[in-house]
Amino acid sequence: MAPAAFGYRRHPDQDRHDPARHPVVVVGAGPVGLSLSIDLAQRGQSVVLLDDADRIGEGSRAICFSKRSLEVWDRLGVADRMLDKGVIWQVGKIFLRDAMVYRFDLLPESGHKMPAFINLQQYYAEAFLLDRVQQLPAIDLRWRNKVTGLAQHNDHAVLTIATPDGEYRLAADYVVACDGARSALRGLVGAEFEGEVFEDQFLIADVKMQAEFPTERWFWFDPPFHSGQSALLHRQPDNVWRIDLQIGADADAAVERQPENVRPRIERMLGHGDFSFEWISVYKFQCRRMQRLLHSRVIFAGDSAHQVSPFGARGANSGLEDGENLAWKLDLVLRGKAGAALLSSYDVERGQAADDNIRASTRSTDFIAPHSAQERRLRGAVLQLAKEADFAKRMVNAGRLSVPSVYDSPLSTPDAEAWAGGPKPGASMIDAPLARTDGAACYLSDAFVAAGRGFTLLHAANGAALPDGVGEIRIGRDAPLRDNAGHFAQRYDASPGAAYLLRPDGYVAARFKQPTPAALDAALARARGQA
Ligand SMILES: O=C(O)CCc1cccc(O)c1
Image (cartoon, rainbow, N blue to C red; front, side, top):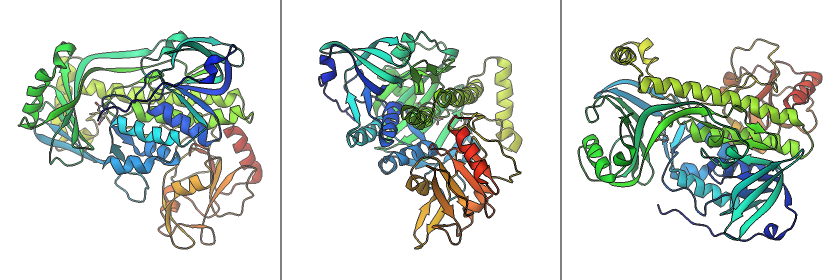
Protein backbone atom coordinates (compact mmCIF):
# COMPACT_ATOMS: atom_id res chain seq x y z
CA MET A 1 0.00 0.00 0.00
CA ALA A 2 1.40 3.42 -0.92
CA PRO A 3 1.65 5.46 2.28
CA ALA A 4 -0.85 8.31 2.57
CA ALA A 5 0.90 11.69 2.84
CA PHE A 6 -0.43 14.68 4.77
CA GLY A 7 0.44 18.30 4.22
CA TYR A 8 2.31 20.61 6.56
CA ARG A 9 0.18 23.56 7.65
CA ARG A 10 1.43 26.67 9.39
CA HIS A 11 -0.23 27.13 12.78
CA PRO A 12 -0.92 30.51 14.43
CA ASP A 13 1.19 29.29 17.41
CA GLN A 14 4.19 29.70 15.10
CA ASP A 15 3.60 33.46 14.86
CA ARG A 16 3.61 34.09 18.61
CA HIS A 17 6.47 35.72 20.39
CA ASP A 18 5.83 33.86 23.65
CA PRO A 19 5.18 30.15 23.33
CA ALA A 20 1.51 29.18 23.33
CA ARG A 21 0.66 26.99 26.33
CA HIS A 22 -1.30 23.74 25.96
CA PRO A 23 -2.30 21.16 28.54
CA VAL A 24 -0.78 18.19 26.67
CA VAL A 25 1.52 17.83 23.72
CA VAL A 26 1.88 14.28 22.41
CA VAL A 27 4.96 13.71 20.26
CA GLY A 28 4.71 10.95 17.65
CA ALA A 29 1.66 10.00 15.58
CA GLY A 30 2.27 6.25 15.53
CA PRO A 31 -0.26 3.79 16.98
CA VAL A 32 0.61 4.74 20.57
CA GLY A 33 0.52 8.53 20.13
CA LEU A 34 -2.65 8.39 18.03
CA SER A 35 -4.45 6.10 20.49
CA LEU A 36 -3.40 8.13 23.51
CA SER A 37 -4.50 11.37 21.84
CA ILE A 38 -7.92 9.88 21.03
CA ASP A 39 -8.29 8.64 24.59
CA LEU A 40 -7.41 12.05 26.04
CA ALA A 41 -9.73 13.83 23.60
CA GLN A 42 -12.58 11.45 24.44
CA ARG A 43 -12.01 12.37 28.07
CA GLY A 44 -12.43 16.06 27.16
CA GLN A 45 -8.78 17.13 26.94
CA SER A 46 -7.34 19.27 24.16
CA VAL A 47 -4.27 17.67 22.63
CA VAL A 48 -1.57 18.96 20.31
CA LEU A 49 -0.14 15.96 18.43
CA LEU A 50 3.18 16.50 16.65
CA ASP A 51 4.87 14.28 14.08
CA ASP A 52 8.11 14.91 12.27
CA ALA A 53 6.99 13.08 9.11
CA ASP A 54 4.20 13.90 6.70
CA ARG A 55 2.95 10.36 6.22
CA ILE A 56 1.96 7.28 8.13
CA GLY A 57 4.67 4.69 8.60
CA GLU A 58 5.98 2.81 5.60
CA GLY A 59 6.40 -0.93 5.76
CA SER A 60 4.26 -3.18 7.83
CA ARG A 61 6.31 -3.31 11.11
CA ALA A 62 3.89 -4.29 13.92
CA ILE A 63 1.31 -6.81 12.74
CA CYS A 64 -0.13 -8.71 15.72
CA PHE A 65 -2.63 -6.82 17.85
CA SER A 66 -3.80 -8.50 21.04
CA LYS A 67 -7.24 -8.92 22.59
CA ARG A 68 -6.29 -6.29 25.12
CA SER A 69 -5.30 -3.79 22.40
CA LEU A 70 -8.57 -4.46 20.61
CA GLU A 71 -10.44 -3.79 23.85
CA VAL A 72 -8.59 -0.48 24.16
CA TRP A 73 -9.43 0.37 20.55
CA ASP A 74 -13.04 -0.64 21.10
CA ARG A 75 -13.26 2.01 23.82
CA LEU A 76 -11.73 4.48 21.37
CA GLY A 77 -14.32 3.66 18.68
CA VAL A 78 -11.95 2.06 16.17
CA ALA A 79 -12.02 -1.67 16.89
CA ASP A 80 -14.72 -2.48 14.32
CA ARG A 81 -12.59 -1.23 11.44
CA MET A 82 -9.53 -3.08 12.76
CA LEU A 83 -11.57 -6.29 13.04
CA ASP A 84 -13.16 -5.86 9.61
CA LYS A 85 -9.80 -5.52 7.90
CA GLY A 86 -7.62 -7.67 10.16
CA VAL A 87 -7.28 -11.43 10.05
CA ILE A 88 -8.41 -13.07 13.27
CA TRP A 89 -6.38 -15.91 14.76
CA GLN A 90 -5.93 -17.78 18.00
CA VAL A 91 -4.02 -20.97 17.22
CA GLY A 92 -0.26 -21.33 17.06
CA LYS A 93 1.80 -24.34 15.98
CA ILE A 94 5.44 -25.03 16.68
CA PHE A 95 7.45 -27.33 14.45
CA LEU A 96 10.79 -29.04 14.89
CA ARG A 97 12.10 -29.55 11.38
CA ASP A 98 8.87 -30.63 9.61
CA ALA A 99 7.07 -32.25 12.59
CA MET A 100 4.65 -30.38 14.81
CA VAL A 101 5.75 -30.52 18.46
CA TYR A 102 3.22 -28.27 20.05
CA ARG A 103 -0.11 -26.54 19.36
CA PHE A 104 -1.67 -23.82 21.49
CA ASP A 105 -4.99 -21.99 21.53
CA LEU A 106 -4.85 -18.48 22.97
CA LEU A 107 -8.59 -18.21 23.64
CA PRO A 108 -10.11 -21.64 24.15
CA GLU A 109 -13.32 -20.31 25.76
CA SER A 110 -16.17 -18.38 24.12
CA GLY A 111 -18.02 -15.35 25.46
CA HIS A 112 -15.49 -12.62 24.71
CA LYS A 113 -16.26 -9.68 22.46
CA MET A 114 -12.72 -9.51 21.12
CA PRO A 115 -10.68 -12.34 19.59
CA ALA A 116 -7.29 -13.45 20.92
CA PHE A 117 -5.40 -11.63 18.17
CA ILE A 118 -5.74 -9.98 14.82
CA ASN A 119 -3.00 -9.51 12.27
CA LEU A 120 -3.13 -6.15 10.58
CA GLN A 121 -0.44 -4.11 8.88
CA GLN A 122 0.57 -1.16 11.05
CA TYR A 123 -0.23 1.25 8.23
CA TYR A 124 -3.87 0.17 8.28
CA ALA A 125 -4.04 0.52 12.07
CA GLU A 126 -2.57 4.02 11.79
CA ALA A 127 -4.93 4.98 8.95
CA PHE A 128 -8.00 3.92 10.97
CA LEU A 129 -6.73 5.76 14.04
CA LEU A 130 -6.09 8.86 11.95
CA ASP A 131 -9.64 8.78 10.62
CA ARG A 132 -10.83 8.75 14.23
CA VAL A 133 -8.48 11.63 15.11
CA GLN A 134 -10.02 13.62 12.30
CA GLN A 135 -13.47 13.21 13.92
CA LEU A 136 -12.19 14.78 17.14
CA PRO A 137 -11.72 18.56 16.95
CA ALA A 138 -9.94 18.50 20.33
CA ILE A 139 -6.89 16.98 18.59
CA ASP A 140 -4.67 19.44 16.74
CA LEU A 141 -2.40 17.24 14.59
CA ARG A 142 0.64 19.00 13.16
CA TRP A 143 2.73 17.18 10.52
CA ARG A 144 6.39 17.97 9.85
CA ASN A 145 6.78 19.36 13.35
CA LYS A 146 10.03 17.94 14.68
CA VAL A 147 11.01 18.40 18.32
CA THR A 148 14.59 19.69 18.52
CA GLY A 149 14.77 21.26 21.98
CA LEU A 150 13.35 20.92 25.48
CA ALA A 151 13.43 23.14 28.55
CA GLN A 152 11.88 21.79 31.74
CA HIS A 153 10.31 24.19 34.25
CA ASN A 154 8.57 23.68 37.57
CA ASP A 155 5.08 23.30 36.21
CA HIS A 156 5.55 22.99 32.45
CA ALA A 157 7.94 22.13 29.64
CA VAL A 158 8.83 24.18 26.58
CA LEU A 159 9.55 22.41 23.31
CA THR A 160 11.47 23.84 20.38
CA ILE A 161 9.98 22.59 17.16
CA ALA A 162 11.47 22.68 13.67
CA THR A 163 9.09 23.06 10.73
CA PRO A 164 9.51 23.80 7.02
CA ASP A 165 8.90 27.47 8.04
CA GLY A 166 11.60 27.47 10.71
CA GLU A 167 11.50 26.95 14.46
CA TYR A 168 8.89 27.88 17.05
CA ARG A 169 8.32 27.11 20.71
CA LEU A 170 5.39 25.47 22.44
CA ALA A 171 4.71 25.18 26.18
CA ALA A 172 2.81 22.27 27.72
CA ASP A 173 1.76 21.22 31.19
CA TYR A 174 2.79 17.72 30.11
CA VAL A 175 4.61 16.31 27.09
CA VAL A 176 4.10 12.66 26.23
CA ALA A 177 6.92 11.14 24.20
CA CYS A 178 5.51 8.50 21.85
CA ASP A 179 8.29 9.16 19.37
CA GLY A 180 9.50 5.61 18.97
CA ALA A 181 12.70 3.68 19.52
CA ARG A 182 14.89 6.53 18.24
CA SER A 183 13.07 9.04 20.48
CA ALA A 184 14.49 12.57 20.21
CA LEU A 185 12.91 13.37 23.58
CA ARG A 186 14.77 10.52 25.27
CA GLY A 187 17.99 12.19 24.13
CA LEU A 188 16.74 15.61 25.24
CA VAL A 189 16.04 14.44 28.81
CA GLY A 190 19.48 12.79 28.81
CA ALA A 191 18.18 9.27 29.46
CA GLU A 192 19.60 6.08 28.01
CA PHE A 193 18.13 2.65 27.38
CA GLU A 194 19.40 0.01 29.79
CA GLY A 195 19.37 -3.68 28.85
CA GLU A 196 20.53 -6.11 26.23
CA VAL A 197 20.95 -6.06 22.48
CA PHE A 198 21.18 -9.63 21.19
CA GLU A 199 23.67 -10.54 18.50
CA ASP A 200 21.45 -12.78 16.35
CA GLN A 201 19.80 -11.09 13.39
CA PHE A 202 16.43 -11.73 11.79
CA LEU A 203 15.30 -11.03 8.29
CA ILE A 204 11.68 -9.86 7.96
CA ALA A 205 9.94 -10.08 4.62
CA ASP A 206 6.36 -9.16 3.90
CA VAL A 207 5.53 -11.29 0.88
CA LYS A 208 2.47 -11.00 -1.32
CA MET A 209 1.17 -14.31 -2.63
CA GLN A 210 -1.87 -16.56 -2.95
CA ALA A 211 -1.47 -19.28 -0.31
CA GLU A 212 -3.67 -21.77 1.44
CA PHE A 213 -1.93 -21.94 4.82
CA PRO A 214 -4.43 -21.71 7.67
CA THR A 215 -4.72 -18.44 9.61
CA GLU A 216 -2.44 -19.60 12.42
CA ARG A 217 0.94 -18.60 13.79
CA TRP A 218 3.54 -21.10 12.60
CA PHE A 219 7.00 -21.21 14.14
CA TRP A 220 9.80 -23.60 13.11
CA PHE A 221 12.99 -24.63 14.83
CA ASP A 222 15.58 -25.92 12.36
CA PRO A 223 13.18 -26.20 9.40
CA PRO A 224 14.26 -28.18 6.32
CA PHE A 225 14.08 -24.96 4.25
CA HIS A 226 16.33 -22.97 6.65
CA SER A 227 18.60 -25.45 8.36
CA GLY A 228 19.90 -24.71 11.87
CA GLN A 229 17.88 -21.50 12.25
CA SER A 230 14.28 -20.57 13.11
CA ALA A 231 11.40 -19.18 11.07
CA LEU A 232 7.99 -17.62 11.67
CA LEU A 233 4.98 -17.26 9.38
CA HIS A 234 1.89 -15.06 9.84
CA ARG A 235 -0.98 -14.23 7.51
CA GLN A 236 -1.90 -10.55 7.07
CA PRO A 237 -4.75 -9.00 5.08
CA ASP A 238 -4.50 -8.52 1.27
CA ASN A 239 -2.66 -11.86 0.77
CA VAL A 240 0.44 -10.51 2.50
CA TRP A 241 2.45 -12.92 4.64
CA ARG A 242 4.99 -11.97 7.30
CA ILE A 243 8.04 -14.20 7.24
CA ASP A 244 10.79 -13.85 9.84
CA LEU A 245 13.99 -15.83 9.25
CA GLN A 246 16.81 -16.06 11.76
CA ILE A 247 20.05 -15.35 9.89
CA GLY A 248 22.64 -15.44 12.67
CA ALA A 249 25.03 -12.95 14.22
CA ASP A 250 27.55 -12.85 11.39
CA ALA A 251 25.18 -12.09 8.51
CA ASP A 252 25.81 -8.83 6.68
CA ALA A 253 22.47 -6.99 7.07
CA ALA A 254 23.03 -4.75 4.03
CA VAL A 255 23.63 -7.78 1.80
CA GLU A 256 20.88 -9.91 3.33
CA ARG A 257 18.14 -7.34 2.79
CA GLN A 258 18.76 -7.16 -0.98
CA PRO A 259 15.67 -8.65 -2.69
CA GLU A 260 17.83 -10.86 -4.93
CA ASN A 261 19.32 -12.44 -1.78
CA VAL A 262 16.00 -12.74 0.05
CA ARG A 263 14.20 -14.36 -2.88
CA PRO A 264 16.04 -17.73 -2.87
CA ARG A 265 15.49 -18.04 0.90
CA ILE A 266 11.73 -17.53 0.49
CA GLU A 267 11.59 -19.82 -2.56
CA ARG A 268 13.20 -22.58 -0.46
CA MET A 269 10.55 -22.02 2.21
CA LEU A 270 7.53 -21.93 -0.11
CA GLY A 271 8.71 -24.31 -2.79
CA HIS A 272 7.85 -21.78 -5.52
CA GLY A 273 8.71 -18.29 -6.70
CA ASP A 274 5.22 -16.96 -7.25
CA PHE A 275 5.35 -14.00 -4.85
CA SER A 276 6.40 -10.37 -4.68
CA PHE A 277 7.94 -8.37 -1.85
CA GLU A 278 6.07 -5.67 0.00
CA TRP A 279 8.73 -4.90 2.60
CA ILE A 280 12.12 -6.27 3.68
CA SER A 281 14.13 -5.45 6.76
CA VAL A 282 16.79 -6.91 9.07
CA TYR A 283 16.69 -6.48 12.84
CA LYS A 284 18.38 -7.48 16.06
CA PHE A 285 16.46 -8.35 19.20
CA GLN A 286 16.67 -5.70 21.87
CA CYS A 287 15.34 -6.04 25.41
CA ARG A 288 15.82 -2.71 27.13
CA ARG A 289 14.05 0.14 28.84
CA MET A 290 14.52 3.57 30.33
CA GLN A 291 14.97 3.35 34.05
CA ARG A 292 12.21 5.96 34.65
CA LEU A 293 9.23 6.67 32.41
CA LEU A 294 8.58 10.07 34.03
CA HIS A 295 11.11 12.82 33.56
CA SER A 296 9.60 15.84 35.26
CA ARG A 297 7.02 17.11 32.73
CA VAL A 298 7.94 14.61 30.02
CA ILE A 299 6.35 11.16 30.13
CA PHE A 300 7.52 8.28 27.95
CA ALA A 301 5.23 5.66 26.38
CA GLY A 302 5.74 2.81 23.91
CA ASP A 303 9.01 2.17 22.06
CA SER A 304 10.53 5.45 23.26
CA ALA A 305 10.45 3.96 26.76
CA HIS A 306 11.08 0.25 26.23
CA GLN A 307 11.92 -2.24 23.53
CA VAL A 308 11.47 -5.98 23.25
CA SER A 309 11.92 -8.53 20.49
CA PRO A 310 9.11 -8.74 17.93
CA PHE A 311 8.50 -12.39 18.89
CA GLY A 312 5.69 -12.40 21.44
CA ALA A 313 4.12 -9.26 19.91
CA ARG A 314 4.78 -7.21 23.01
CA GLY A 315 6.06 -4.05 21.33
CA ALA A 316 3.02 -2.23 19.94
CA ASN A 317 0.65 -3.98 22.36
CA SER A 318 2.54 -2.84 25.44
CA GLY A 319 2.72 0.68 24.00
CA LEU A 320 -1.05 0.77 23.62
CA GLU A 321 -1.38 -0.46 27.22
CA ASP A 322 0.98 2.36 28.32
CA GLY A 323 -1.31 4.85 26.60
CA GLU A 324 -4.42 3.48 28.21
CA ASN A 325 -2.80 3.49 31.66
CA LEU A 326 -1.66 7.08 31.21
CA ALA A 327 -4.72 8.71 29.62
CA TRP A 328 -7.09 8.59 32.58
CA LYS A 329 -4.38 9.53 35.06
CA LEU A 330 -3.27 12.54 33.02
CA ASP A 331 -6.90 13.55 32.58
CA LEU A 332 -7.55 13.56 36.36
CA VAL A 333 -4.30 15.40 37.06
CA LEU A 334 -5.06 18.06 34.42
CA ARG A 335 -8.52 18.53 35.94
CA GLY A 336 -6.92 19.06 39.36
CA LYS A 337 -8.70 15.95 40.68
CA ALA A 338 -5.52 14.01 41.37
CA GLY A 339 -1.93 14.85 42.11
CA ALA A 340 1.58 13.70 41.35
CA ALA A 341 1.08 10.37 43.16
CA LEU A 342 -1.34 9.22 40.47
CA LEU A 343 1.17 10.01 37.73
CA SER A 344 3.91 8.25 39.70
CA SER A 345 1.75 5.14 39.61
CA TYR A 346 2.13 5.21 35.80
CA ASP A 347 5.86 4.82 36.27
CA VAL A 348 5.34 2.01 38.81
CA GLU A 349 2.72 0.05 36.87
CA ARG A 350 4.06 0.44 33.37
CA GLY A 351 7.63 0.02 34.62
CA GLN A 352 6.55 -3.36 36.06
CA ALA A 353 4.90 -4.22 32.75
CA ALA A 354 8.08 -3.28 30.86
CA ASP A 355 10.08 -5.54 33.20
CA ASP A 356 7.60 -8.42 32.70
CA ASN A 357 7.82 -8.01 28.95
CA ILE A 358 11.59 -7.78 28.92
CA ARG A 359 11.84 -10.89 31.11
CA ALA A 360 9.51 -12.86 28.82
CA SER A 361 11.18 -11.57 25.68
CA THR A 362 14.68 -12.35 26.97
CA ARG A 363 13.65 -15.90 27.87
CA SER A 364 12.24 -16.60 24.45
CA THR A 365 15.21 -14.96 22.75
CA ASP A 366 17.56 -17.19 24.74
CA PHE A 367 15.51 -20.24 23.67
CA ILE A 368 15.37 -19.20 20.02
CA ALA A 369 19.04 -18.18 19.84
CA PRO A 370 20.99 -20.26 22.42
CA HIS A 371 24.27 -18.73 23.64
CA SER A 372 26.36 -21.91 23.79
CA ALA A 373 26.60 -25.42 22.39
CA GLN A 374 25.34 -26.69 25.76
CA GLU A 375 22.23 -24.49 25.65
CA ARG A 376 21.62 -25.63 22.10
CA ARG A 377 21.82 -29.31 23.14
CA LEU A 378 19.42 -28.68 26.01
CA ARG A 379 17.00 -26.96 23.65
CA GLY A 380 17.25 -29.88 21.22
CA ALA A 381 16.35 -32.30 24.02
CA VAL A 382 13.38 -30.17 25.12
CA LEU A 383 12.07 -29.99 21.55
CA GLN A 384 12.41 -33.74 21.03
CA LEU A 385 10.64 -34.49 24.30
CA ALA A 386 7.90 -31.96 23.60
CA LYS A 387 6.49 -34.22 20.88
CA GLU A 388 5.35 -36.60 23.64
CA ALA A 389 5.65 -35.00 27.08
CA ASP A 390 3.47 -32.17 28.37
CA PHE A 391 6.12 -30.91 30.81
CA ALA A 392 8.50 -30.39 27.88
CA LYS A 393 5.83 -28.62 25.78
CA ARG A 394 5.64 -26.04 28.54
CA MET A 395 9.41 -25.46 28.25
CA VAL A 396 9.29 -24.72 24.51
CA ASN A 397 9.49 -20.97 24.21
CA ALA A 398 9.10 -19.62 20.72
CA GLY A 399 7.85 -16.25 21.95
CA ARG A 400 4.81 -16.59 24.22
CA LEU A 401 2.33 -13.99 23.18
CA SER A 402 1.53 -10.68 24.84
CA VAL A 403 -0.82 -10.70 27.80
CA PRO A 404 -1.57 -7.73 30.06
CA SER A 405 0.54 -7.50 33.22
CA VAL A 406 -0.94 -7.75 36.70
CA TYR A 407 0.21 -4.70 38.65
CA ASP A 408 1.51 -4.77 42.19
CA SER A 409 0.22 -1.23 42.52
CA PRO A 410 -0.09 1.42 45.19
CA LEU A 411 -3.53 2.10 43.67
CA SER A 412 -4.84 -1.38 44.53
CA THR A 413 -6.64 -2.32 47.74
CA PRO A 414 -5.51 -5.84 48.69
CA ASP A 415 -8.20 -8.49 49.05
CA ALA A 416 -9.53 -8.78 52.60
CA GLU A 417 -11.56 -11.92 51.79
CA ALA A 418 -10.81 -15.24 50.15
CA TRP A 419 -11.77 -15.42 46.47
CA ALA A 420 -11.88 -18.67 44.52
CA GLY A 421 -11.21 -16.89 41.21
CA GLY A 422 -11.77 -13.71 39.28
CA PRO A 423 -9.34 -10.90 38.40
CA LYS A 424 -7.53 -9.75 41.50
CA PRO A 425 -6.73 -6.11 42.30
CA GLY A 426 -4.13 -4.95 39.78
CA ALA A 427 -5.44 -7.29 37.03
CA SER A 428 -7.44 -6.21 34.04
CA MET A 429 -11.18 -6.96 33.83
CA ILE A 430 -12.28 -10.09 31.98
CA ASP A 431 -15.04 -9.91 29.42
CA ALA A 432 -18.27 -11.93 29.78
CA PRO A 433 -21.44 -12.30 27.74
CA LEU A 434 -24.56 -10.68 29.30
CA ALA A 435 -28.14 -9.93 28.30
CA ARG A 436 -30.17 -6.76 28.67
CA THR A 437 -33.67 -6.83 30.16
CA ASP A 438 -35.16 -6.94 26.63
CA GLY A 439 -33.11 -10.08 25.97
CA ALA A 440 -30.57 -8.39 23.67
CA ALA A 441 -27.09 -9.82 23.97
CA CYS A 442 -24.20 -7.61 25.00
CA TYR A 443 -20.80 -7.93 26.62
CA LEU A 444 -19.46 -6.74 29.93
CA SER A 445 -16.94 -4.67 27.96
CA ASP A 446 -19.86 -2.84 26.28
CA ALA A 447 -21.44 -2.20 29.66
CA PHE A 448 -18.15 -0.71 30.88
CA VAL A 449 -18.15 1.79 27.99
CA ALA A 450 -21.85 2.55 28.53
CA ALA A 451 -21.14 3.23 32.22
CA GLY A 452 -18.82 6.07 31.15
CA ARG A 453 -15.28 4.59 31.23
CA GLY A 454 -14.62 6.19 34.60
CA PHE A 455 -14.37 4.48 37.96
CA THR A 456 -17.12 1.89 37.82
CA LEU A 457 -18.73 -0.38 40.38
CA LEU A 458 -19.38 -3.77 38.82
CA HIS A 459 -21.61 -5.69 41.13
CA ALA A 460 -23.89 -8.66 41.46
CA ALA A 461 -26.77 -6.40 42.46
CA ASN A 462 -26.25 -5.57 46.10
CA GLY A 463 -28.05 -2.29 46.65
CA ALA A 464 -24.77 -0.62 47.67
CA ALA A 465 -24.78 3.19 47.55
CA LEU A 466 -22.48 4.36 44.76
CA PRO A 467 -19.70 6.72 45.75
CA ASP A 468 -19.91 10.12 44.00
CA GLY A 469 -18.76 10.16 40.38
CA VAL A 470 -18.68 6.38 40.06
CA GLY A 471 -20.49 4.63 37.22
CA GLU A 472 -22.33 1.38 37.69
CA ILE A 473 -22.74 -2.02 36.08
CA ARG A 474 -25.43 -3.91 37.95
CA ILE A 475 -25.93 -7.58 37.12
CA GLY A 476 -28.65 -9.78 38.54
CA ARG A 477 -32.17 -11.13 38.16
CA ASP A 478 -33.79 -7.74 38.86
CA ALA A 479 -30.94 -5.65 37.45
CA PRO A 480 -30.48 -4.01 34.00
CA LEU A 481 -28.04 -6.76 32.99
CA ARG A 482 -28.52 -10.52 33.31
CA ASP A 483 -25.91 -13.23 33.55
CA ASN A 484 -28.09 -15.94 31.99
CA ALA A 485 -25.25 -18.30 31.12
CA GLY A 486 -23.47 -17.77 34.45
CA HIS A 487 -20.20 -16.66 32.81
CA PHE A 488 -19.96 -13.48 34.85
CA ALA A 489 -20.55 -15.34 38.14
CA GLN A 490 -17.94 -17.91 37.19
CA ARG A 491 -15.29 -15.55 35.77
CA TYR A 492 -15.60 -13.15 38.73
CA ASP A 493 -16.42 -15.64 41.52
CA ALA A 494 -19.38 -13.30 41.94
CA SER A 495 -21.69 -14.54 44.68
CA PRO A 496 -24.75 -12.33 45.37
CA GLY A 497 -23.61 -8.96 46.71
CA ALA A 498 -20.03 -9.17 45.37
CA ALA A 499 -18.62 -5.98 43.90
CA TYR A 500 -15.55 -5.02 41.87
CA LEU A 501 -14.32 -1.43 41.74
CA LEU A 502 -12.95 -0.92 38.22
CA ARG A 503 -10.54 1.85 37.28
CA PRO A 504 -11.09 3.95 34.13
CA ASP A 505 -8.69 1.63 32.26
CA GLY A 506 -10.76 -1.42 33.21
CA TYR A 507 -8.28 -2.69 35.80
CA VAL A 508 -9.54 -3.93 39.13
CA ALA A 509 -8.81 -1.48 41.96
CA ALA A 510 -10.55 -3.44 44.73
CA ARG A 511 -13.16 -6.14 45.26
CA PHE A 512 -15.46 -7.02 48.11
CA LYS A 513 -17.84 -9.84 48.92
CA GLN A 514 -20.19 -7.36 50.59
CA PRO A 515 -18.88 -3.79 50.24
CA THR A 516 -19.58 -1.11 52.82
CA PRO A 517 -19.72 2.57 51.83
CA ALA A 518 -16.62 3.25 53.93
CA ALA A 519 -14.65 0.43 52.26
CA LEU A 520 -15.65 1.66 48.79
CA ASP A 521 -14.72 5.27 49.61
CA ALA A 522 -11.33 4.21 50.92
CA ALA A 523 -10.65 2.02 47.87
CA LEU A 524 -11.67 4.82 45.54
CA ALA A 525 -9.41 7.35 47.25
CA ARG A 526 -6.54 4.90 47.02
CA ALA A 527 -7.21 4.19 43.35
CA ARG A 528 -7.09 7.95 42.69
CA GLY A 529 -3.69 8.12 44.33
CA GLN A 530 -5.05 9.96 47.35
CA ALA A 531 -4.28 7.43 50.08
O1 LIG B 1 4.17 -14.07 16.45
C1 LIG B 1 4.93 -13.35 17.05
O2 LIG B 1 5.56 -13.73 18.03
C2 LIG B 1 5.11 -11.92 16.63
C3 LIG B 1 5.17 -11.72 15.17
C4 LIG B 1 5.83 -10.45 14.73
C5 LIG B 1 5.40 -9.22 15.21
C6 LIG B 1 6.04 -8.06 14.78
C7 LIG B 1 7.09 -8.13 13.89
C8 LIG B 1 7.48 -9.36 13.41
O3 LIG B 1 8.46 -9.40 12.51
C9 LIG B 1 6.86 -10.52 13.84
